[in-house]
Amino acid sequence: MSKLLTKDKDVVVPGECLAEGMDYLPGIGTYRDGEKILASRLGLSKIDGRALELIPLSGRYLPKRGDTIIAKVTEITMSAWRVNTNSAYQAMLGMRDATSEFIPKGANLTKYFNFGDYLVCKITNVTSQRLVDITMKGPGLRKLRGGRIIQVNTNKVPRIIGKKGSMVSMVKNATGCKIIVGQNGIIWLQGEDPKMEILAVNTIKKIEEESHISGLTDRIKEFLEKETGKKIVLEQITEGGEQNDLH
Image 1 (cartoon, rainbow, N blue to C red):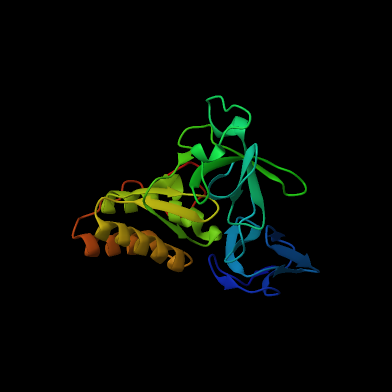
Image 2: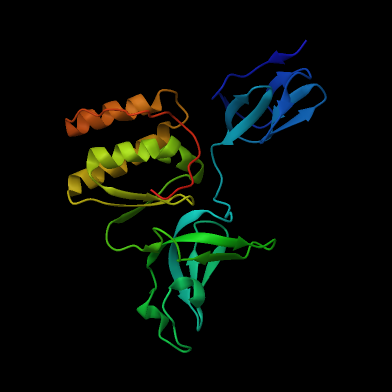
């Protein structure tokens, strides 16, 4: 007889037994050993019908094609910019993908993007050797000016964004800040009121720290209402969920 030994969103450690019997199937982050399903890493258990998966609690960003990230220019060559992707792999931005305007050969590339600039860009290719190419051509892709940069655990990005952008939209509306969440765990935000900017930072950090605890949306709503003195109306906000759009 099969037996489930974990609950949804339980914190589990490598080697921990999640289920016994053949009625359950191992998913991402788990493996079968005889009639047992064991955790292969630290994470939150996720029960999806008969499948058992783990949502990782730690680990660095792994670049994926189609991801929108915030990257920092670290090197400029004769024909490209090298950027830090907040991962073990740097990315290259070629002249053809940098701008729609023609860049003549031998041009001073610092006129477009300089050392230390942060760019909202999209990953176009990742080779088997983890060589990463990016583009600046697309809606919302641009060089960031002003504001502040913060870094979060990349595995918490889906919770910070929320389903259909619900969580980050709540923070934006409550604080009046512009916020862009890169899927590589780098976040840019900018507000006219320095106090609201700091509140937005603290709220994002709170989401990151408490993302594994149920009732997150309600807690963040109460926190923002207390800090701003404004009533927040949740319009079809649901917790969790992946969201790959730019916010």
